[in-house]
Length: 311
Ligand code: SAM
Image 1 (cartoon, rainbow, N blue to C red):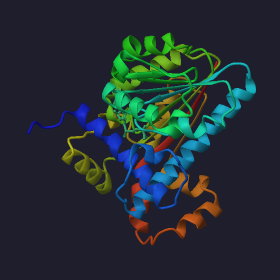
Image 2 (image 1 turned 90 degrees about the vertical axis):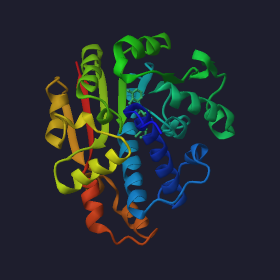
Image 3 (image 1 turned 60 degrees about the vertical axis):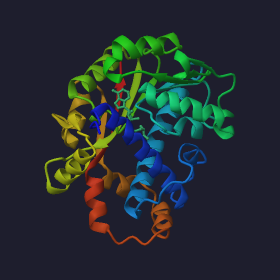
Image 4 (image 1 turned 135 degrees about the vertical axis):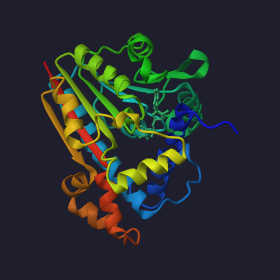
């Protein structure tokens, strides 16, 4: 058998994310009527993973909802743009299609292998298709568009040359208020490629932009080394960690580019500060959970960063 390339292995990480989401829904951690559109019969993940997936979803939802609401309130007639880098099988658009204030434009970018499959799946399923009025496909079925939602195929490492022209052809204007999301994506790219996206976003932002990043950090301690070894077994590396491997570095990459407000937390801090007490009590009852030490270690190895640009 031919070993997987990093690109193929990275595409495979999307299956993991989708399975984890569906598992957390099945176990009662969160509600997401769309998670099982992508994974019909999810294998059950360990309590640790379910709780981690739940925390990541809750915290990212809080941040995304807050940015969209605020940008909308500041300029109600201007569409808020959401750009999800490496969106994979993320369900956020479908979960928020009916609740976020209109107008907004939602762009999801991923490799063609992923967008082609996602487009077919969401167009065929009745629950997701209900949010895709009058959709049409482009690029031989790899891209799918409605007035609001744009599923765009391409390689994020070709950001300015390949991705931006496709976004612009579908109504994107970087000068409008825009929220960029990278959920476990930039870290799989070389730092130079991730930085090229950040530089472009910074140079082209209008009066307002926000960036939300969720990804692995702290590869140097014993737990971090184990995390890397586990990934390596699956032919995966985290080249993005080079030069951006802790909270200070995560913060610095925005601060150095002049982003006004940046906060970087690890997920242990996020769980403690951002998950409401009644939610903590509710999820504590869902499954037997005795891996407290491992839970803390796992959560300390993921960062959640949100940055805001203001001109
Ligand atoms: N953001 C989704 C989530 O959290 O559920 C998916 C995360 S998955 C771990 C990483 C995704 O990023 C995969 O779908 C992968 O194909 C995509 N990705 C990574 N590098 C990419 C690149 N250079 N161009 C396009 N997509 C990329």
